[in-house]
Image 1 (cartoon, rainbow, N blue to C red):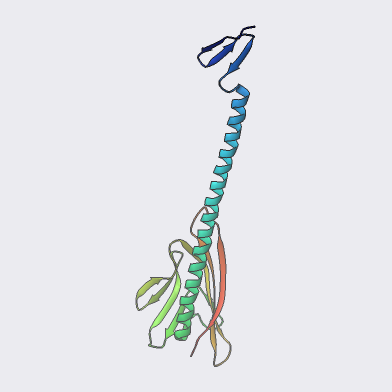
Image 2 (image 1 turned 30 degrees about the horizontal axis):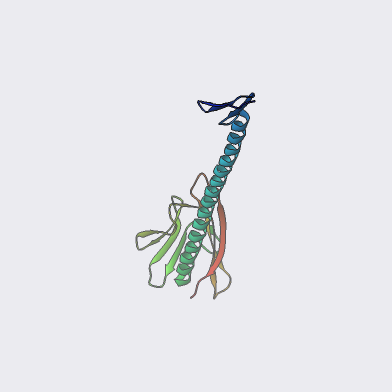
Length: 177
């Protein structure tokens, strides 16, 4: 039997009823497409997960930095104060007024969900716009004739609809008179 070879548009035809194709069968094409789709969806899912984790990490970092900064500033102002003007002893307030050694007053409160200090008519933001402060409470604690303290409590949250991370902060700071 003599084998002859003819080539016609990518189809190799051999005599003796042997036919070879230069391409994929439908089943092979479907399998390769399914494998590529699975790998691509895995990469996309992994990428989305990384972006979500990065976003959450940024929110946590921003909250921690702003909380620590706010506590440091509030604590230093309380320690430098001569006395507490408001609230009265044992009372709770969302505003703290400190009477400073030089006769001026320093006020701390929330304005538009931002923790601010007012000194000499100037308002200074302690936290930034990425952070929401709520439930601010100052309690003036007077334990005896020689020591006075202020308990501070507030809730701090990241200002984003996507990230719902928040933290409750509470500490007590004594006046140094």
